[in-house]
Amino acid sequence: MDAEKIRQGVRLLLEGIGEDPEREGLRDTPDRVARMYAELFAGYADSASTHLSTTFASPDSEMVLEKDITFYSTCEHHLLPFFGKVHIAYIPDGRVVGISKLARTVEVFARRLQIQEQMTAQIADALMAELHPKGAMVAVDAEHTCMTMRGIKKPGTRTLTYCSRGAFAKDPELKREFFSLVR
Image (tube, rainbow, N blue to C red; front, top):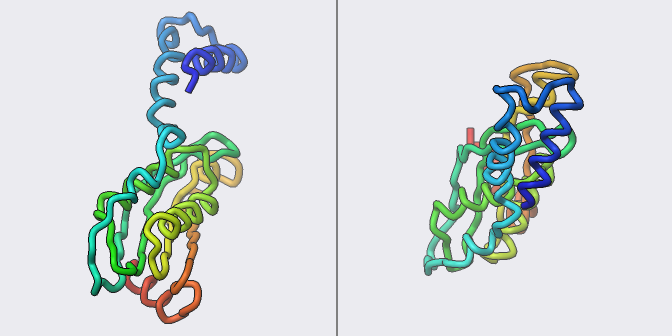
């Protein structure tokens, strides 16, 4: 990440909206925003495979479900936040991953410029590629500030996306079980 380019861009943005970047309250804003962006977009420097590579034998495991993983991301269309909960399930094929690694995988993709539909699929695809489970399913329930504070201005509107792979894509009963568990 190029912090100097971010600082320059923020100065131009402040000037563009009619502000004085040298005003006392704004003087340090370009640097604050550069530091904030390093945190918000840390997913570009991270990889799901880093978090999903250590697994443990578990030959008799059925569905593993982790729900209500809070996330914050940034809409690539308006550069405004969207946030909500992610629910992840997979059916191990003899090996499981530590449960904190599922939340870390969410962070890898949430901390990038995103659209919700793409993030949902990226998480499911990472699980399939790294864990080689019998199936994976991801559901994301989010509120988008680009819809709540601008444009249509409908606070409280939530968007639900889901992605099913492997056994979850083939078996409607398994998909129903997933949704009944995340309610």
